[in-house]
Length: 225
Image (cartoon, helix red, strand yellow):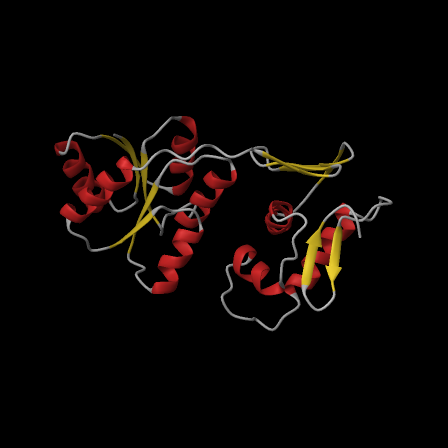
């Protein structure tokens, strides 16, 4: 297998590299998140082994960026964060497996082999469209009726979630978990304020509103009211 190891700890990287080479795999390394993302998107890999705590770009953001861009290469997280919530968050971010440090190489080798036996997932579309609203996931750009719309990173993520669930009602709790990674209620109006700003950019200059409030339930992105 062609494996990319994204790990900033030199001792761990050498340990994993040596073991995987001896197991017959071809392995390359990156020592920070940004280089890892560059290599992960620039070549075809059979597996990515990613540390969650990386300089430059953390592992969770790296994996989310890959998945958003339609790259479905299997990902195995290596991390010292071993709590249930940590594992759930890692898997929800798009990882396929999760191994807590310190670990035995035999277990890592078994997990690598298991991921190698899984069928490759097909790539997802790199564009989303609802009515005249279009989002390019690779270019990280949005336009409506041909006019470019500038969004902040959190606004982009919020709109992406709404577009992926177009026609469905999404609750405040769903948005807090999936867009802000909050698994508790912060008792702030963070969702409401971001929805308001997003409406100002998406709907304000158009006759047809796309972002709708479903009273007592949540929000829905759809063409009709």
